[in-house]
Amino acid sequence: MHILTHRRSRLFNWSLIVGIALWLLPIAPSWADMAQTPTEAVRTTVEDVVRILSNEELKRPDHLAERRQEIEGVLRQRVSYEDMAKQALGAQWLGLETEERREFVDLFVQLLRDSFAGKIDAYADEQVLYLSEQQDERVAEVRTKLSGRKSDTLLDFRLADHNGTWLVYDVVIDGASIVHNYRAQFASIIRHVSYPGLVKRMRDRALVVKTSEAVVSQ
Image 1 (spheres, rainbow, N blue to C red):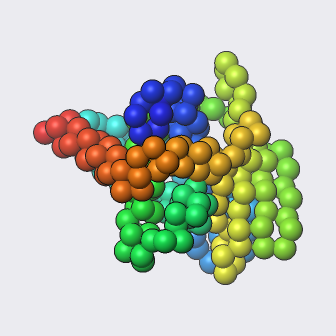
Image 2: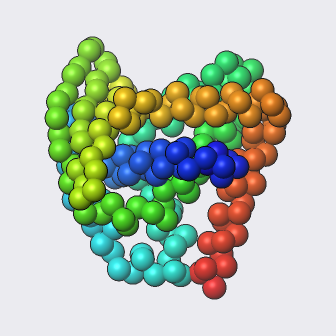
């Protein structure tokens, strides 16, 4: 299911796991957070995730939009989306104006958020195991395993130190990089359509989700 055309189920599942992975990140950095190691920054989030997932009011259909907004707020706090979007888009990024870059990052955030938001509850009871941490100057990798009743998934968080706060710039799922996965998808669409065509698909997808939310909340 292609992430924009819904043709390749494998890629949908990837986006779902990405969302689950990014949900494991802290909701808001505090002074205490900035002193944390990368592993601690990931580990201390689990309770916040459980709190949001268990909020019965946010599960109501008329609170769907609010729930999605909370998800987006979580993701923006601990993920360097500009770095992620830049790497995913590749060389095309260099030719974009500032406003175009900002729009692409915003659409990229929505793409990730909307891909997993409706499915996250199924993974609320999964256990997160912290396997190891490696640091090399200003970058780090935290290896974890999402352990479920049916299968296990290896999640490696790649983080960079941004002025004392560890921000994720990639997630590796069972050995495959999410950024590289998106780069391949975006490159294919740009090659066969165009960059404006890619942006149009992302805008259209965001509009469909927004419209469906409005209908559900009525």
